[in-house]
Length: 457
Image (cartoon, rainbow, N blue to C red; front, side, top):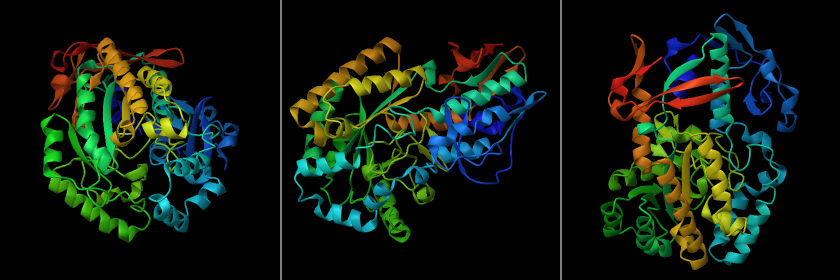
């Protein structure tokens, strides 16, 4: 399972001993790994059926060390996949939520949705989400379970091999501490028509964004609209097929729709995708022909489909790269929480910055037409601009992030005498970093030297 660490950090597999896991068998459930990390899957130490009882089974106490090797009472790769792919969700879903997500209930809602006043629809949504504060898992407002798990396993592997520092390929190009991307989902004709003004607003702060556009039913997509987005340096992506909430309801229908979605991706030369309402069915993603997806949320307490991928970094779902949404949507903040401020966004930003993660924002031109909401968005852009300039954060379009993450995955660290060098196409922007043991935690040091100059041990 050292390969799992290598895929996350891009560390040389020869730098540490082995990380061995137990054969997957027995009950599947929740357990802890130390005081903070909740896991889901099979574990020799035992599991709980309810997440509230996960603390009764601390797998950290059952770690065994044999020389430079560590033996875990679970399979690290499977646990990480269970978290990223939200396989823990069914055990968290209350009966009321299961009723609301029944097929007949969803049909009725989407049939009536267009005729319901906004105030009624938003009241219904607030009722549905009224338990968001008390949901025990993932952690609100940002969940780092997958990242904490990798970090602790790396620390243990370093401890077992008596290693004080381990080199790896830094997450972001040119040694940037974080990455930030802006995305806009276009829901209606009014949102489409407001998109040029939103581009003006983004441009006024020196920022670019991707626009996810619904290709069927909701509104027309004129060629000049697509060209305007791209000619101004913004990105064009596909947003669902018709945004009717039924993309993943039945496998056969999904495959029919996926074929049409892939057609639109080819027609518009679009590389990215986001499903309507952040719905997802990850085990069906092999039908898509996109480079990257943006339908997973870090913690989905305020999304129609609950869950969360529990990480603030991109990751691969087979051939598709996932760029998770790591901050709350504008609609959720304005209309579910009824908060017209940037306080929640600032709190999420501060947490993600501390972990060097991906800061992803989703706002809608449809909801920013209103002057009060637009003023809040302007405050957000001003805050982001100041933060970017102060901390040299990498701002990029989603397609650029996806390309970098694929490049990083192909790079390797090679020892050259007393130093390490990065090899592979695209190494010019890569930087060597070190994970350093500081007691019971890790700290990270990023070298300033380009990859070809090497970094000394």
